[in-house]
Image 1 (cartoon, one colour):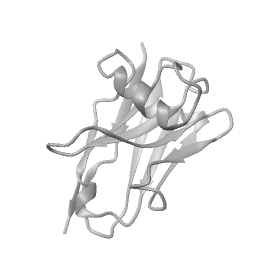
Image 2 (cartoon, helix red, strand yellow; image 1 turned 120 degrees about the horizontal axis):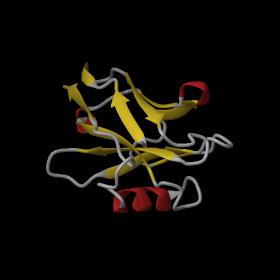
Image 3 (cartoon, helix red, strand yellow; image 1 turned 135 degrees about the horizontal axis):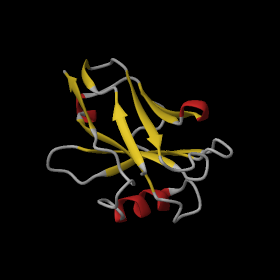
Length: 134
């Protein structure tokens, strides 16, 4: 059974840092790209980052480029999102997800493909809350 499980969320002061983890199981970790998304109250879910495991290619949205860094630990089948210089606007539920290999690795299309399969078993994690206090 494919599964993605996020952890590491919490409450942090503005300017602080958090590292989120996404533990992946039940599929060949190295085959598919994994991305991070977030959804703030009243807003649409947005793609933040993506990483492919065969060559470590990464991709970021303009909203987090330079502040957030994604990485992976293939031995642990875990993807990370290091978030620095956090702002109150970063408050949201954060998700990790895969496009189940539909696309061709990391690109803006990855986020569209992953969002199109929300609800498909084993494609999205359950989310972890991040709250940034001013």
